[in-house]
Image (tube, rainbow over all chains, first blue to last red; front, side):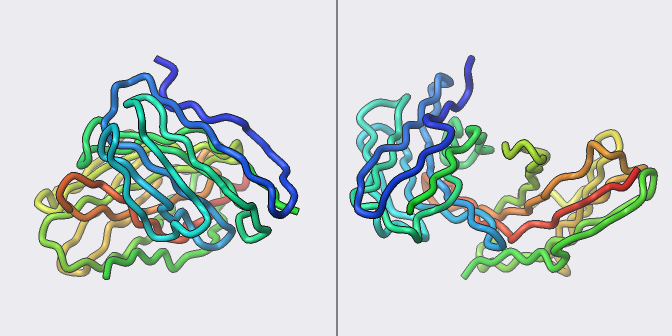
Length: 112
Length: 116
C-alpha cells in the first residue's frame, strides 16, 4: 500500500490562478479530509468526506472546493488563489468516520 | 465549542532528560477521542496514540507515556530519556463522536528540541 499520496509536493501560484491539489489513498478508506497548516495555528479542517459522493465543510472552507467521485480520490480545488492561501496542505484518511486518520506527506503552496 | 490548548510553544531539553508535553481540551460531548501526532523536521505527520473518553488508563509505549485525566481535561505526553530523534513539533488533537465524521481539532503544537 502506498497509503495517502499527495501531489504536487510544492507549488507556486500567482494571485488569481486556479489549481487542484491531488490526494489519493489505496486503503479503501471511506473518510477523507483536507487540512491546512499555518505557523502558530496548528492544523485546521477545510473540507471532509465520509464517502464517495458526500462532502461537507470544515472550519475554513472559503476559497476551496472539493468533490469525491471515487473512494480513492479527494481533490482540493482553489478557484482563484489568494496570498492568504499560502500554507501547507495535508490530506488524511481513515477507514470510517470514527477511526484514526493517517496523513499524506503534504503540499506546500505559495501564492504570490 | 471544542478547543485544544497546548500552552507550551517551545521546549528545550538536554538529551536523556525526561520531558512532559501538556494538552488541555474542552468539549461538551461525553464521547470523544484524543490524539497525539508528531511532526519531525521532514514535515510529515506521524500518528502516536488515540484514546477514547471512556478509557482513562495511562499508556506506555517504550519511552513514551500518556496520562489522561478527565477530571482536569488533560492528556499529557511524557518522553522518558529523550533523544535527539525526538526533536519535532508535537500536536494534540480532539475528535468528537459526531455521526459519521471524525474531524480533528488540533492544538497549536509544542516544538521540542533535544540538545545532544
